[in-house]
Length: 299
Ligand code: NAD
Ligand code: MG
Image (cartoon, rainbow, N blue to C red):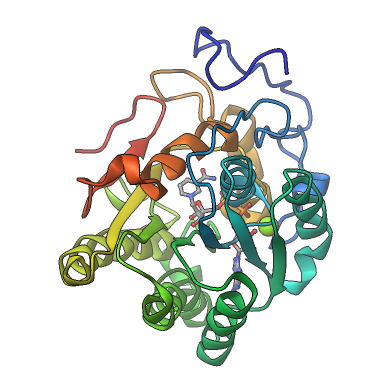
């Protein structure tokens, strides 16, 4: 590895992304396989140091984007990992699983739709069977579809965004806690949208508000069992979510350029925060939301 996550670099120029093809579009859910330009998930940069040795982790949306970067980091820190994803994302999932297994840990893929309660229960049961326990749960899967006008936002989309982003998190968490020992950690992917909602992301942004509140309330509930619960609020990150309807095509070329650092973040830049929140290093941190926003900061 030439550079790794510890190499000193100017954060403004750390990632030079070509402007061509940024406005490419793809169907929902998007694939990293066809994301243009490609994103960095730490494949060639994330260096592990045993911070999660022997831990067992379930990561939803672990096939691509932020979830893939988190899965790679967890595996390189020594954790066994289950990733969940939609069946249509098998290609991304297989690529991710190959990278995870190269770390010498156990990695499993369980496809299925988390907007279905029965699937959520079976995902947790199968994960616990494969892993032996669940020490880390990352509720990261999410749906985001941009709709400019209120009249065009359908009940179907509104319900599906809530079912995926909020209900799925609730069903998986409820099923998972009985497999979680004291010292376990739950990490929810919320968003800057929870605090600064954009017009056009009404359903999505309001689910992120719900995730932020759920995270803080659940933390107070579960500390009685020694389980910590935190959230990560990313700013604009270059992932397939954006090119598959998360943003209108005309906004993609300048995506992320209005934050103080002046560029979108890469999934790899999120992973260290998830590692910190998963590991015992964050033993006194619960009910917290950590921003990774390029300077757009949480209130
Ligand atoms: P991504 O498309 O790579 O990941 C989202 C994942 O969600 C998909 O891979 C898919 O597997 C999963 N998913 C969606 N619907 C599902 C369903 N019904 N059942 C099972 N899985 C489902 O994009 P990403 O940007 O890495 O998103 C990861 C998380 O980060 C999401 O919660 C997203 O809201 C959040 N986030 C992203 C950004 C950003 O700018 N990219 C910013 C803030 C928050
Ligand atoms: Mg995906």
